Length: 526
Image (cartoon, rainbow, N blue to C red; front, side):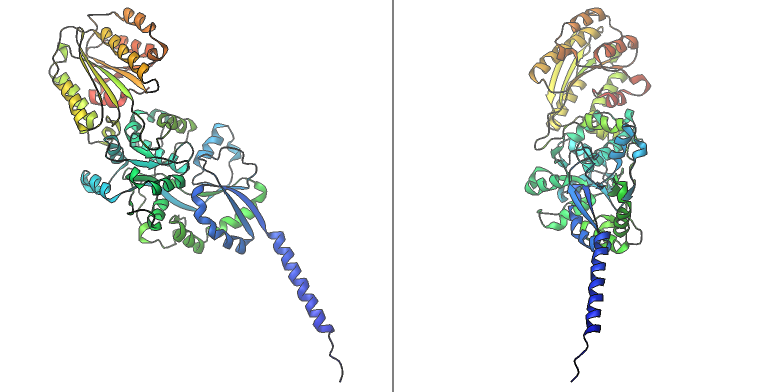
């Protein structure tokens, strides 16, 4: 028997081996590993990244860090994947690096919304015509102590910053992007008083809420995170998702190219992530809305986003907003500000003028149903002192707002006061600074301001020069307390403006609007 020829078989094996080695070498050559600085929220995307690697040869290694503006060294990263690139671009603008803007592609979208417990949502809707809740309604409930909420720290979290921008934009009521003059600390005080939970990221915030569900009635976060939380089975009852009527900030989770040398791999990753089939998988896994219009959405993602609020286009606006809001509370809300109102009760205030003053205090106590009124009202924890004066100081009363009883007491004090002859403007302001000196000594870190309202010129008590001499002798902390005069009636505008300038405050003219509007505008803010 002739032996079989093995040469063809051997040759075929060698060819197959060579092809396999060539394929492996080609695969290794095309394979790219990219380091990505990613928002902690994006941990839910990681299970899909193996499919990305298998299909494209691009491996994304996500490094999760809570950072609102991608601050810190970025040289070790090829890509960034935040919830939003807006704060980062503002930071580049501030540093004059507009040309350094990286390529950025939106991957999925989610609005910043409010998740409410069912009981609180039902109660709030009963008090709102049509039942469509707004940020103003949330701020109003936070101010009167009937709503406690959790929100990520806006100094460190994209989500927290977007939430704060949304609230402040709604409070400004301009319908456009926030400007520096729109950012006023008084509009956020009541809202902030209701914050009882926070976290460096929204993921940390939600984990904290799962552990302490009794600590808050609401969470402010991305719609996707709240839907994921509801589906997790980790909380006693699902939160009701509310899309505020006055608008929301929308995050688009962009993938950003930091290393231009990795452009080819970046485009592969972006094109894969934006494929309709992948967008569907992302939506099903993360509850974020797809960027493509052709991907069918489940019922829970069909709610209209409505008014997408614009993000500020100036770094100074965002910086001022965060400074005004300050460090958010975690646990009990921080103590509120102390405002001392010095109110003219001379006989010229009888009649219509006093009615306007009392109406202004009623509005600040919650009677004003407008969005502006809800944002500017007195809030739980705020300390309020009212000093009535005429030719001398008549009476004074101090309350710390804990509920309606305290506000009724204050309104009664303003509403039932007796009048006196003459107008001792500077004696009244001197008494205000006596109160301020005691207050700053007792609570050194508590914000304090004076509001002086008069409709006439000084004709009794201290002269302006005598007041300034007394003021100059105060300790540094008391001397730094600002005065905000409200010009009304026939008051001496120049003298009031001098007092404001001397103490670091500013004057508001109630004659050009109303006492109610003037008090809402001023509320002790610089």
